[in-house]
Amino acid sequence: MGLTRDTLQAYAGFYRKHLLEDIMPFWEDRTQDREYGGYLTCFDRQGQLTSGDKYTWCQGRQVWMFSALYNQIEKRQTWLDLARHGRDFLVERAHAGGGRWHYHLDRQGTVVVPNLSLFTDGFAILALCEYAQASGSDEDLDLIRQAFDRYERNLYDPAFDQYHHFTLNPQYLYHGPYMITVNVANVAAPVLGQERTRPITDYCLDKVLNVFARDEERVLFEMVARDGGLVDSHEGRMINPGHVLESMWFVLHEARARGDRAMVDRVVQICDWIVEKGFDHQQGGILAFVDPGGKEPYVPQVVRDLGEGWASKIWWVHSESLYTLALAAHLGERDDFWQHFHHVHDYTQQHFFDPEYGEWYKYLHRDGSVKVGDKGSKVKSAFHIPRALMYLVLLFEDMLSEDS
Image 1: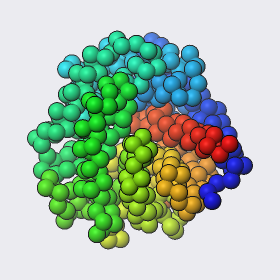
Image 2 (image 1 turned 30 degrees about the vertical axis):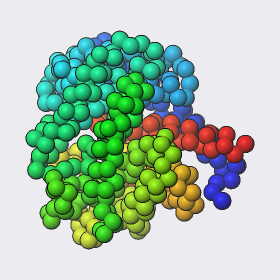
Image 3 (image 1 turned 90 degrees about the horizontal axis):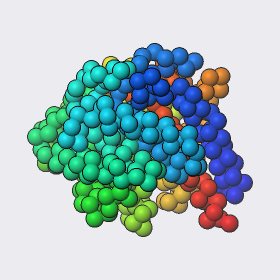
Image 4 (image 1 turned 90 degrees about the vertical axis):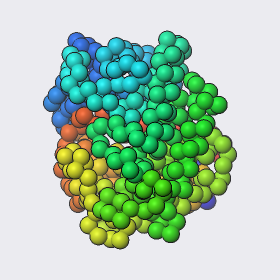
């Protein structure tokens, strides 16, 4: 069962073309700031610059992306040069010292918002580790070790509260830091070694799969009490379907590397919950937030400030979900998940992709009409979409190899 060889070939070809012809040229042609260094990421629908400010989340993410394309798709010198360009800005201008990074700089590289954030630190680690593999250089190894050590100490510290631009109360546990750490540790492992990264990976996997994911409620919550209990509040009941599905492919990468079928089955179970509760079964696509009891969901203020509502359709949610559903269908041997994948595939091509100017729109209304047509911002850059497309290419091409 599963996909026919013709269908696999069609998807492999489609996603390679979509990545290399529809998405990456948008960024390759305009993201490099040749005057001040680093990347420009704020663009309107047509690709006109809307702000020169530089957000370290995006700087780190794009260093990782260009490096990963070089490592995993093709040894294009353009990608390696772009990665180096971003790496230099990250290390020389955004580094706050001690293995931590400033959140927001102006175009010239002057710090605008000095707030430190575990998320920013994690994206910088992703960047430096992937670039180290692309460049074959150990120039950043000491900095990577320092940054990973600091990151680990902060994650374990129950009083730690530096998560800008989010406000997370140390009284509670939040899914975000633990899911991101699974990915950070996975990318860092080839550089630092499995012995160094395995303990924190196991710690975070347990939190994601057994503390935030609750069998009785058939939900993966974004927030629980520090002792693991449920929190009866608007925020405590909040479900973020995109976050859950992105988190699940981080876990699946670990499960695949370990040959852990039980972990795969747990991921598939959690994905089942999200398909049931998080898919918009009336108007298509995936909702931004849902409440497990079917009430109108709570939406955090920081998310509302970004322009997202509970029924918004968001670029990163749908791109990450594409890859998760395909990987879960393949590793979990679930043919019904291919149907879920087909649904999201069709939805993204019909509603998110802009065939006139390239790239995907940022936000849609619930009915699929364009809400925000910008292609880049302080959070949207060459990351979520090309990352998901790259992994889809690799997945479908690997499946073709297995089938030959």
